[in-house]
Length: 556
Image 1: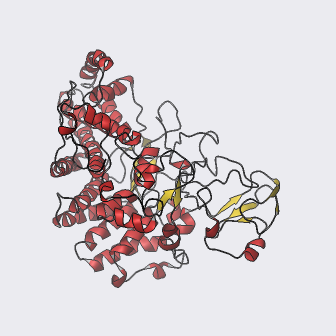
Image 2: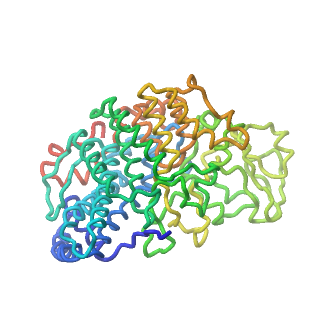
Image 3: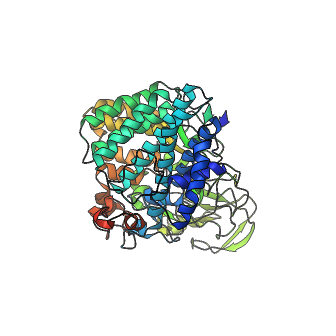
């Protein structure tokens, strides 16, 4: 299957720059604008120009998926992850006053998403002028642009609330912008996706892998309805609108849950029957942008421990995200039948630096000796007495010994395909939508309509797949066990580390409550206003009228 890797031509880069003029301009930008516009006006009327334009829009997905900013916005400050020892963004977990309108992640995300939006606007408006291209292909590219535009506005409205709604190409810099009501933003998102769905490819994956498909648009639209339902613009009817979309994705595109949960994120298996849509990365430094960086953020400091050194197999440990006690002991507390703890976290390390050592964290023994491939660290996931730990010829890392440097590492994003152990720009595609999530979203839509029996049946499909072999029956729950708390924890078990959790908690209206209960580092500071992120100050400053025309979110 051919992959679309979104090589961005000189013209495509120029289009991204030109399309961002409304949000980011200077004297130099004005000087460049005419040249850029001439290239775009001429080139976009060709088949190659149409494809390069939509590819440039796709490339802005890399602003969110697999990046530090995308992970910080969704992993930090939740009930299941807190901060590890390293990095300068801990305030996004602890919600201190450092998290303000000067936040670099917010500024970068805002600017890049709007660049992508205006590139989509250009494709949509100019597509009728393209010659020498079958109309079916033109319609598909326009629908892809509407999918991307809807995706970006959906992120913006969840994170920032009312935002500037631009549905026409901005060709000349302007300072006349305003914050549209949430209801208008959601209406535009829904219209884009409804118009896109008929003209997108209908298979489980595009023939040019990585392009949006009908299944991806239906999955996204269903999630939009679920999220709007709990917003000021929503109603209970949104759940009924979401349900058939999720059912269609599950039943009509040939998608299927992989038999083994552990295979979903297995390295080298990024293209599989469970993937609805993924964001494309490459091993080519010329076309990979900043790369998929998720492989570094979830790892403990294994590389300075006896018998170990950093390698590509175990990853480059940035020690950013540490699972909370609630995550490990409650969410993943049942491990006899459920395989997801075992298959989501690294529970042992094998020596890649043989020799004789003195113990570091496990003082149940003093000296250690390792040959190549010997176990050096074991994480049993439960506490053992010092005498029990002393029986093992390696260090045993138990929960009572966890620190901000030592804790279970998430294995979903490991990237041993990097060229060396220091490479930050990973090349794995980022799985943005997968079928297990569709099942869980369907169960949510059913649950909030009071269809508890149906929700139970739906969630049991995911749970049976997650079972250890022969434990499928034990994993099933009854209708009496199908509660909101169970649903919330089931999403955490299945989707941990996949850039969903903060958005889930926000959607359910329980972010502040659950952070205060389960994230001790964040609990003292989080307030109700933190359910929105700060509008970047540079956006407010470049609007005519400043804060009176484009007001900051409360609390910042």
